[in-house]
Length: 89
Length: 452
Picture 1 (spheres, helix red, strand yellow):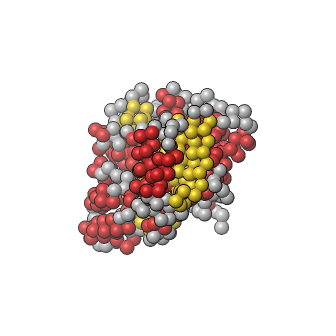
Picture 2 (cartoon, chains in turn cyan, blue; picture 1 turned 180 degrees about the horizontal axis):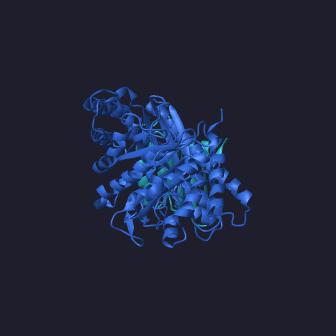
Picture 3 (cartoon, rainbow over the protein chains, first blue to last red; picture 1 turned 90 degrees about the vertical axis):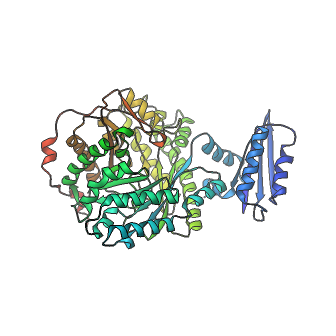
């Protein structure tokens, strides 16, 4: 079971650190990260393994949303199945 | 790793273009709740619904979090209630309506649909009692929806039922006159009603369906409009392809959610209904899709052709994306629930006659149309008869959900709030259809019925 975390917004110091910190504290293993900074816009996509989560998925989701609010970024976590089903035949 | 532009596209559809799962609807058969005594029926109905749908709302919320996709409504559809009424010895259908309301509150669902009767060829025991109880039932409950099927391609149109429904709609509006005449907003009269429809007010659980199943209704007019607007110079056939591709993606999401809900609830997956169901929210309008194709206002000449293209392309895109497409599937054109339709009606461009033509090519019918308060019952019946005739002859589902605005006239409006929106009073023809409607009887099934 994998989920995709997306972070979009203005670039600031320590975004990757804070997001991966939330993942680590809940035992979500980061598998892949791609990020790009276009002018000021920061976009990061993180594939995480959520099989061995130490909490409910909703708790991880709430923690990331709260971090997004704190940093003024848009942070989503969604099960990878939704992208696979919508964009791959 | 997934393609980042695909990820962004999905997020944009949900965040900016109002993509959502409109409803997860659990269909529950209540045939095993029949009894001679109405109180026993009510007890059994309450027990079965609350047992089967105990986890429905919670499951919906879990899926919403897991996939990050909003699920707007959780609903239940039941066996047409007239069948339960027919098993009793003259039991009061309003008691059953109150029980269904209690069950809706206990399970936390948004709506229960299926306070229904299927009378396309005639009334059987229980049907007429149920229909006559509809105004009272809808006035006393908040989350219950009623529907009556008055015609089919196979059976023709039951004109006695058409006459009766004109009266019932008026009575329902009068009983709820102090609540913006909200009663008839929860009542729909159908021709060729589908048995697996997850959308209200016409949802019921047909007798050919399994004991319990889940359906999913997806929505996404905003996504289609955004896709079209990216190609301002595309030819019509290119537009059709763009709509197909978009409908495919939306439906795949519905299929995923339906499959997951079915696993989590332990009941079979029924169908995905891929309907473009508008809401009054900005950017969630079917009228705006048609305007995006190049019409200056929805309702002008060309609207029917644009809608036909849209409806067909949505179906073609969706049908490959799901293991089972059903329900109504296509584009809805409810007036009060669609910001673009409201504007077009207020501007006087969109008329009931044009909407009637549009229903010949869209997935349902005349929907959420507010009529002047003094519209006679026979005129409402005549509107129903016209609409049922379109459905019968074209082998498609058609429906009428009109709301007589008691005490109001053209230029005024009814404000239902929420997903139901705001409906301007639309003008109707003043000439009388009294004599035609008073004849009663049945319009025989057309030649199209003789397919065997």
